[in-house]
Length: 286
Image 1 (spheres, rainbow, N blue to C red):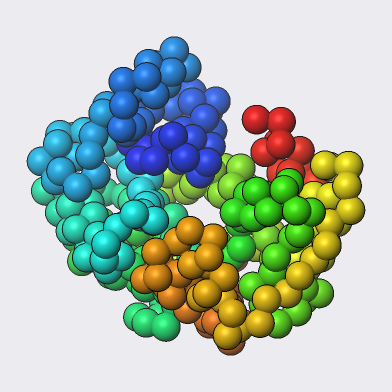
Image 2 (image 1 turned 90 degrees about the vertical axis):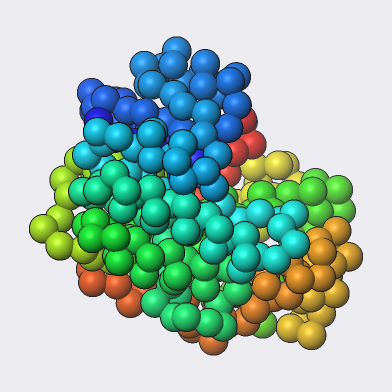
């Protein structure tokens, strides 16, 4: 039996659906009863669990052969590091308590670095904490999500502006669809490795301008691509409604990306192929 955290999110839900399609026994962890009912109708067992509750999480992990886990990024947290560490301590503690044999974790490029990567630093600490439990850890380190365009969708729909937090909108970068991450997570859970490893998930390459053109085509309008200079990243994010400490963490993430700190450096790579046009069509139709 496999336990999947974050089943109401894009990657967690894709992981659970792939496992169910393979005929696996699945227990999903959700926050509310309505989400639980939806998953039970699809054939999964569902538990309402707060990931910060180590005891309740441990109960949900009893008897599992594999656990898919992620580290939620809370835009309302007063202190990102403190919030992340509470989750990490609970998750790793429950894994250790139940002696879960295999954990598949949604990580990120740059998670091998302890600092200078914004919220990804929490993933570094989480990888280390899970490894310390004695479980076999498969850390899926993805690059840019294709779905990240949803972060600027309000600006796109309202003003026709596609903002880019980088020096150039024309640098091609690998971008991974969350559907592909879910499929990779499902496969990893069903075929655990002999020892812990980090896997780089590498998607097709697109520039931000490529994404803007594809998104504009899907929306039936031409978008204006605007590159935002580094000194304006923090103020722009604050003006969008984010608290200053969240804005600075995200600005640090963008700087790390510009400096190449998020490049793939795992044990091996998995190439995936979903085109960004497919992802855009899926998101817009939801």
